[in-house]
Length: 474
Ligand code: 5AD
Ligand code: SF4
Image (cartoon, rainbow, N blue to C red):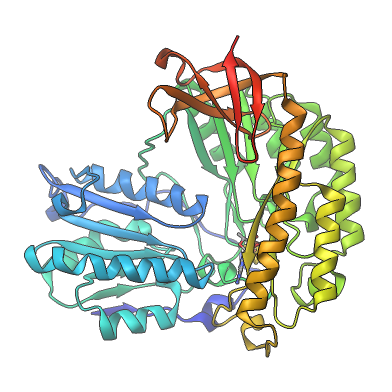
């Protein structure tokens, strides 16, 4: 049953209409209350922190209906894939997983298998699902997570695939249930969507218009997280700097950040910041408060002005460097990381060399590097591209070599230094080793007692690697 099909043209539309803040939309139909008693759900989350945060909402909704989470998909009565559409390889992973779940559905026909997240917002993906993947019961998007109980009921009552994907600008939903697994660090949404329309990026189509939560709602959430013992919060948005622009108030990201800092939660982070509206006020607030972590993610994407222009990034390399230098000068010893795309359509060797030169100038603490991937519906996907995939991959390797060199160099700043580590838990590789992150977002492994988990402890760095630091508790 097709309730709403995604429509990229509609998703592209932006109006000046006020954003509705909806506080009382959520309900569980009577038939669905407690339907999950004694049953399990299994969610696989792909992609960015926005999806991780959405999964926490989905967890909360399902648990309100009585379901419990499980790690083994074979035990679940509801399986959901919360998908990412940012690059083709992310999508291929999801299609692989969809295929792998087919046998579960065959052996357990009452299983509800759903696909949600950014891929659900794409017309082509949904058409492919309808054509080829008949074992999917439910497709819903990023704008109607609150309808999940009703959609599940409909999926249980019909053998057809239910598709309900809204391609609207979006609203702000408050008061949705949430279940956070992590009791130490929390994501806090401050705004949704993106209006930047970088020409390569699908996000403005899958996540809708930039829309901010009210400061009072954000502050209330942070206060209750603090009361629950959280040590770190990360303020989330596709571009947090745009916070407040859609509100009829004086609030902006600098004022919000300051208000959050004053709540005295030990660690505050935020992501992602676009260089475009990174204001002087923001820099001043970041510099002023010690609980705003000295780590900033500032995606540059390319070191060439012509490419930046075709990407619609709205800044030049010179402006980026100026901002970079200002942040470094304002907050002592700050770490800066970035995102870089190589092989944008028709990127020349010289233009790529400009990116390498920028990396040399900035000596980033970390850089997430990607081969350009055409996303259907975006302006860049229509550009003829004369750079072969092999050439793009070669450029990525060259870039990564340089990035890794500077990562190691930046890590050396901490050799023999005492740093504060927020302990996450046992390390992934060795049960007897603890791991956690420093204020500068460096991963540290060290021997220590499990009672330290969730605490901020002083650790001396004894060995520096590219991806992590080795330490000893002092
Ligand atoms: N191809 C490759 N990388 C992309 N990103 C966004 N869209 C694409 C694309 N089409 C990268 C950008 C962004 C990060 C989250 O993903 O670098 O900052
Ligand atoms: Fe995509 Fe650009 Fe928006 Fe980031 S700022 S989500 S790269 S369109």
